[in-house]
Amino acid sequence: MDLGINGRTAIVCGSSRGLGRACATSLARAGCTVVVNGIDPTRLAATADTIARETGARVIPVAGDVTTHEGQDRLLEACPAPDILITNAGGPPYRDFREIDRAAMLAGVTANMVTPIELIQRTVDGMAERGFGRIVNITSVSVKMPVLGLDLSSGARAGLTAFLAGVARSVAHANVTINNLLPGFIDTDRFRSGVTANAATLGISERDMRARREEQVPARRIGTPEEFGEACAFLCSAQAGYITGQNLLMDGGLHQAAF
Ligand SMILES: NC(=O)c1ccc[n+]([C@@H]2O[C@H](COP(=O)([O-])OP(=O)(O)OC[C@H]3O[C@@H](n4cnc5c(N)ncnc54)[C@H](OP(=O)(O)O)[C@@H]3O)[C@@H](O)[C@H]2O)c1
Image (cartoon, rainbow, N blue to C red; front, top):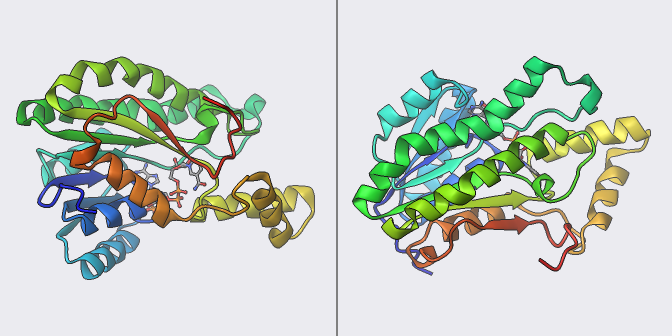
């Protein structure tokens, strides 16, 4: 399917690995010039080379912490007028809510709520002036259902979702859409490190822990980053211009609800 975004420019935050990398790859395959980002410059450079080689697209690596203004400035210097923005950063670590002090809470809210809002503030008006914009925020199934130990992630991301619900409607007239993609269990380094930690807590093998996770999911498997990236690219397509303010679960049915 031609997504109608050949020649568009995209900034994909947190994309040297995992879900962000998959989104960057799918957008590059659709013909976008893609700015990729991560903290570790060596890993980022290798990812940029691989995506460019695999897709033939122009891929620009911009290393830096996207939760800081310096990191955001660097991304926008490399791509001052993006057509597409994918917001993403690492999630907070699993932790009992009693152990989260004020500094940790503010860091979680900064990474998972304030940072996407700041990036949208800096890009959305240009998109509206040019008559095309697609913004996708990588959030989490934890916005819709509690995940023990991820209360900070749930709270900050639910705040982001509510904040942007009105913003999305305010720019819809200009063919700018803002949607959220909510991963359940997707096979990335972060997911695998969670399996390792949970296995150690329960005193079982990683293999058994992974099997338990698979059993939780109606699809009976862990999702792949590739299918996540393809869904993201579709939300960024020309054809998806009438979809805005939505929360799309990518969870194999994990969140059991009719609506
Ligand atoms: N995978 C899942 O099943 C799942 C489920 C629910 C929610 N999520 C959420 O989805 C997001 C992505 O998860 P993932 O599984 O793809 O994680 P991942 O495999 O750990 O990859 C995270 C990526 O983001 C980059 N990154 C992290 N913090 C950053 C920062 N402050 N500035 C710039 N880049 C940063 C990392 O760069 P480096 O390589 O340099 O570290 C890496 O490229 C996370 O917020 C996570 O909480 C994931």
